[in-house]
Image 1 (cartoon, rainbow, N blue to C red):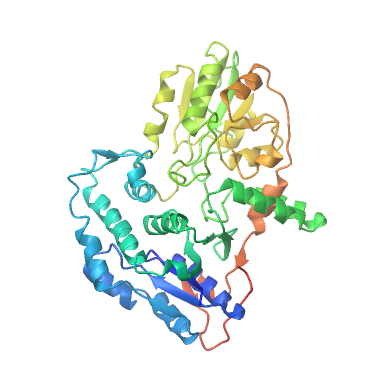
Image 2: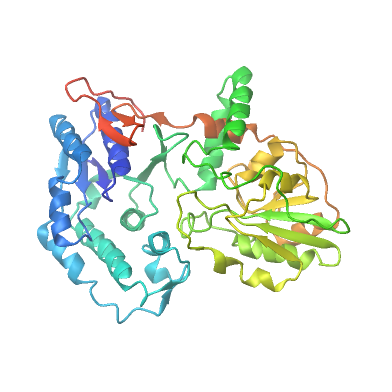
Length: 453
C-alpha cells in the first residue's frame, strides 16, 4: 500500500502543531498515514532519549496519544542510527575554513547555520560545535531515510523546508522523484498553508495570489486588502512583529535639495539564503548586486542614494548579521547608509525620494498602495505579474528607467488580500495567547477533519 509519510523534524511545538493538524485533517480521506519522528536525530544522546519519549513537551505527549488513538503509526529512528549520526560528524578537520552560500557540499546545512550563527560567511573554527551539530542532523536524516521504503511512498509532508533536517529530506525526496508537500504558517499563526514547491517560492506564491484574488468576492476583497495594508504598517500579522517600533514619525536624515534622491529598502537576507527560486542568468542575483548597479548607473554628481537597511527585530541581538553584505556598495561616495536600529521613518523617507527601489521587500507594495508611483522592484516577487512596468531585473532595463523615471501605479490589492486571508484554519489545536503555547483540542471530542491536500 502506498503511504503518505509525515516528518517531525525539529523539536519545536509549532512544527508539531502543523504536522499534527495535517495528519488529523486527512483522516476523512481514509489515507494511509505514517509519521516519522526524527526530532532526536543529531541531538546529544540524553536529549535524544527525552525527545523520543516526549518527556520535555506536554503538547507532544498529548499529540502522540491523539495520533495513536486515530490509528496513525509513529516510527522512530533506531538507537544505532542516532549514535552513528553523532560519531560521523565529530571531526571538523577536513572542512574548509569558511562555509558560504556557493558551497554545494554544504547546501543542506548552510541556511540553518546562517540562522544559528548570524553570519553569512561562516567560520568553521569559530562555530565548530554548531557545524558539527548541523552535520550530525543531516547525516542522521540520510541514514534514517535509507531505511525507509521510499518506493512505497506516494507523498512526503514536512514543515518549512529551510532548516537542516527538513532541507535534507527535501533534497532526498527530489533525488528519488517522490512528491513533497511543505507546511508553513499562513496569514496568521492560527492558519497554515500547503506548498508544493516551497513557502519561499515566489512563483508558487504568485499563482496562489492570482487564484485567491480571482475567486474572491469582488465587493469585499478590496476592503479586506486595504485593512491589511493599514495593519501591516504597524504590525506584520503573520510574524506578530512591529518592524516600525524604533521609528519616529516623520524623522528624516538631512536630504540634499540639489540632487535627485533614490532610496533602496533592503530586505532580510538570511531568511532566504539557499531557498530562493532559481534566478535567470542575466538578472540580479542578490539585493547587493542590484544596489551596486544603481550606484554605478546613477552618478554621484546627479544622485544621492540612501540604503535603508531592514529594521531589526525588537527582540534581536546586537549582532548585525548582514553588515558584510553591503561592503562592496560602500565604495561609492554617494551612498548614505541608514542602519537597522535607526529612528528614521521609512515611509516619510520614501515620499521624500524621487525613486524608491527594493529587491523583494513588503514595503514595495505598501508604498505603491499609499500612492507612490516611482517604486521599482529589482527581482521576481510574488506580485511581479501585477507590476510589469516597474519590475526591473537586469542592468539594461534599470539603466533605461533611471535615465527617465516614469510613473506607474500597479494594483497591489491582490497581494494584500492574499496576505490577509490565505491558509487553512488550524482546528485541532488552540493557541493560548496569554503565554503563546499550543494546546491539543480536547481529545475526547471528535477530531475535526477536512479534505485539504
